[in-house]
Amino acid sequence: MFPNPQDALPHPPHPSIEQYRTLAKELVKACRSGDRDAVGVWADRWVESLFRSLGQPPAGHGRQAMDRAAAQVEEFAVRKLKTNARTCVLADAQFVIARSHGFHSWAKFVSHLDALAQAGTETAGFEAAADAVVEGDEVALGRLLGEQPALITARSAREHRATLLHYVSANGVEGYRQRTPPNVVEIARVLLAAGAEVDAEADVYGGGCTTLGLVATSAHPRDAGVQIPLLQLLLDKDARIEHPNLAGNDHGAVFACLANGCHDAAVYLAGRGARLDLVGAAGIGRLDVVRGYFDQSGAPKPDTTRQQMESALRQSCGWGHADVAEYLLERGADPDAGDVDGHTALHHAVYGGHLPVIELLLAQGARPGARSRYGDVVGAAAWRAAHGGEADRYVAIIEALVAAGAKVPERHPPVNARVDAVLARHDSVADPSRYWWGEEPRKRKS
Image (tube, rainbow, N blue to C red; front, side, top):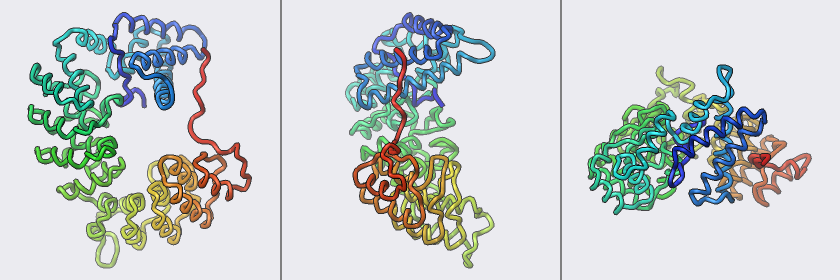
């Protein structure tokens, strides 16, 4: 829920405490106006002016990001300012602004801005060094560390309390700094050589997160092709794989990687000694380890629970390990058991785009019409096809699901010509007006 460290708004290039005080008073005025749209108008204007000050015109993806940020600020402001205890108080308006920027209180935010305005302070140095890390500027980073050696152990004034080393993960810290430069391994090497604590913890995802855990579960270094080299460097510098809560949410290293879409990192960490339980082993296709959780008759050992079996099945299906999935199904794992969101093994296989696993599950009696809190399995296929899935692959998946008895959902996204044609062919109404996806455009009175 907003605000969290990842959603923190950046401040403008030359932030003014007085301007922020004025902004807070304007929020109070909007709150007291009686106009139900007034707080939203205030949020829209503030966020748009902030984006423009940073040279990010609100168009295309920039517009989407701006609208999302404004909607989050509006919801938070309404929730905070219109409580039963007190309504439209200046202190609460100031709190909304401070929290929107990632600070625990107005006092901490003001202190941060005051320190930022003074050259040579640790705050100003840390902010400049954090920018150098995410921009891959080795020269600037080296200069800053030379001028202020204490920066290597300093922590952000924001609520996540991250060190500079945490920023190489592009995870957990403020979202506008979640970027992975091509030379991030060299940047990390500079920080470690300067004395960065490799297992320092950041206060994100429940606290206790280390750089290793954040790197291993981050899409940015994964997509940049540097996740494994970065993990290797950290491990070579004695980072602990089994550090408690290293990636948050009380998950072990391997499962945390799998839950965040980082299969290669999970395999790599397992190869470097990460503990493998049944679920983790199933997710990386280690049938040899999975077999160890069952006795010679094929029955689960006393400490192997049905919940673990079903979670293992979902992971194996989501990552396309048909041999592991078949082994678990033969030993009684329920293909229709859902996770916390109701996603079944079939949902996971569909999101992963694994047709052989889908066919295996259907042959083993998985319900093609299974629903999660987000919709049915065909809807999941349409969503995935609209978000990076290969058209040919998802045409085949949708055909297989419909042949097994699945129905096309009443509302589904326009994807592309091939997938839309398949959906329309199996749609009994085939009304194009029902083809819809995503949020309605944000509309606000000016």
